[in-house]
Image (cartoon, rainbow, N blue to C red):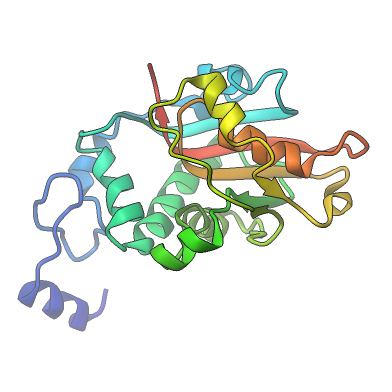
Length: 231
């Protein structure tokens, strides 16, 4: 770490996004203590049959699925997602993606995956936010694994309404036909990793996968997110 970074930290200390305590020079966004206390799912140990993976069974050709930690609103952990999405801190996504990938590499979770596709947001939302938070997470994962990120493989056409207060089947209906790709044949025979920030019912991920997976193409999917809303 450069002397300049140490000097900047001395003049303008950086707080941990979870606890607010001052970060050490070597720490990025989340302190070591909070990082160690993340409520990890450990789904990388059972990527084929955990509770999150089961949400996708019969609805898309899923291989593996995992989330790094359990997510609940108004908790210290949720502040990672809030700052990433609403407080204009895209680098949180990059750093968290790197940390997640670093932990999951040993389990073999990324073996055989050909490309990473982040769940897209609408053009309007991207202009408003300045970036796609899922793409930032995907870039962090890519920097650790070497798997290429395909940010333009699929488009989100429109945003109907917030998913927050909808049930599982209402969410699935809400996102039907919201995604489009111009070259699904390109992914024939490929294994794609879909990346998002948080999974609740999996409706958005399923809709995105279905846009990429016309019946004539043999495409496999795995899913990876930072958070999973366990209920």
